[in-house]
Image (cartoon, rainbow, N blue to C red; front, side, top):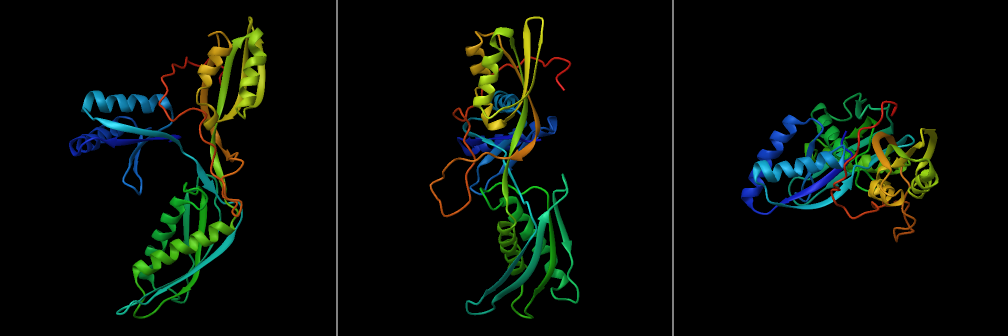
Length: 311
């Protein structure tokens, strides 16, 4: 699962070619890596940990000779819907010559866990010709991938296309694709969308005398303490903590425990995000997620192997 993305900006066209070859080989060798191209053309590499990203970047430079500027670390937030809602778009344009016409009505609702995007064509009676159904589905998928809150993909959504209309002359695949995308945005905004952030399970192992410091570190980072157990002068503290709050955690722990604290992290689940207090626009409920505590860097942190009972 991709939890982090980092941008790669090749210095020259030759570096861009080498980057493409290098990424193909790295992904073939490591299924945990992913690549995407943003709308502005930026190439981004994703992985589940900073360490895996760092290894990939070093291999691109060392083995494939790629010279590039690394743009920042980005958390893989998601969006989800919390209720059912209806959306509609009648896309009609006339600019001299042939016009454009597409009209769709849809219902959206939260899908089953891990179901992804589910499209249900419930059109009956020829309200929309069959050749326009797939363009509509394509527009819906693209709108779903862009989200409606902060540009993050919407997870696990069911979409039912139940009605619409067409024009014998002006209707086209492009018009219905646009209508599908706009109708999805209309419905999703009504479906009370929320932002989701990755939550990590963290285990801190510290000397008994530093237990309170370990708990204070976690609490200050929005960590929810789960349990603490002491054995042989060492205390193990378990907690759930947002991924955005883990940057610099190991360095902070080391400093406050005189270098004697150990930190282990692993992914747990996604949960509704704690949002910034004020994004400067009080006329909309949209709020950007909190930024990582540290600058967007690939950290060189060596994490010891977790103990056998780290479950």
